[in-house]
Length: 259
Length: 312
Image 1 (cartoon, chains in turn blue, brown):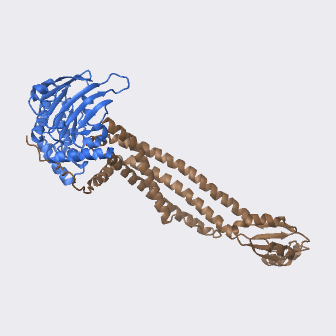
Image 2 (spheres, one colour):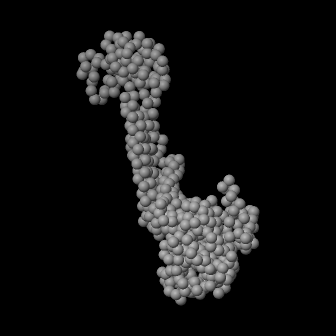
Image 3 (cartoon, chains in turn purple, yellow):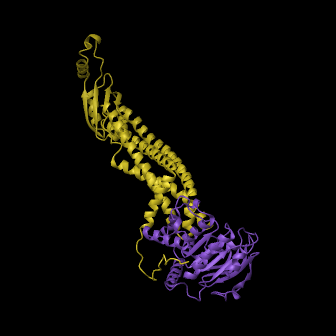
């Protein structure tokens, strides 16, 4: 029964992707009544949270440290399970499918760049394609294209420790997005970068969004970037969504609203 | 900024899946690179596996060899019944022939025995000058139909009247059989202990390897690589290193066999054994090494992967 559901969800998602993404009526990312506490009896990090992101929507998740931003992202990529409520990604109930089936359709970017020190920049990016089963030539070609896209084609032969923080993050983004995922989740991607470098990184996210319209959810502290990017802003505080600019911002999915 | 064309083209729903062997190629490449990055750990794993396999295989081979030797000796066993003074050897032989398991019973009278001894020592001593009377008793040589039934037959013959003593080779064979059994048990016990130790070292080394390659595991996990494939690459690496350990053990077995054969050639009275390092032994060594490597890697990675999958 469970296997049938998985298969059906995947089949539907593949059909959706063949047409450029999930059906417009189906949320790309959705939380419904989600509560999460890391210890039994402790104060929940998230308390009955509802959130919907439509396909192609770009949103920022903001709030103070410990507010639950990372937890929201982890719920979507299956690193934590909700105590109550439902988490859906491209129509799949995350509790009912193994995490790798969900992550296959995501590009995950983190504050720590997660680069492999023994591999060159090109090898690091190609590694993302290799582990997904690309033949070596295709993986290298895709890596070169991605490096050119993030402006690092001249650094392909360098090692990560020879790069600045911003360059390392661009390599991380290139690798995470090499398979052109329909969903991009980023957890404080500019947390280690100065404002100018952070803006350059966000330019890449903006270009990605314009190029293939993935659903993007980016957790960040940076108020400057929020103002500059003009995307939907969702504020998490005390385990609840306290602000959502969906109604006043441009872009797809404006109708998504607070519970 | 212009982004590249899609790297992944979605396949239409219901499209037939084709075998993709590139992941296996990458697994082998990562195994080679991982091994060269942690060369000392790899060498330790190979040597530990080789030692464990060699010990178990060596003890098993020694036990088998001893048992084979005992069996050969047992098959050659004959009984000699010493007849009491005054008893009639021919009557006793007739009674022995009627016992179950006896093929033949031949009387060797005391004169024949004396003549044989006299002939044997003719160049050294004149037995007639030493002994005033013939000191040898009559005796009966008994051929046994079933060598395995020697011990009960000896007990039965010893109960017959007119029997002074029953002399047989079994008394030397039985301790040899006990030694073979002991070698077998001790070999398995010590070998199992050593194998467990090798497994422990293997698990710890693999845990370190997984820790050192945590970034790769994390990236793979985050990009949606199935846990079975992540696990599989470490299992493959474990199997390859274990295989190397098994091959090393097999090579040592072959060398050991050469040395033992040379030693055995000097002990010409010993019957030939079954041979230590046959193809089967080599195959078993290699398989055992690979199994040990897979088990060690699998146990180490299982827990790490479970944590990584959930806590990425």
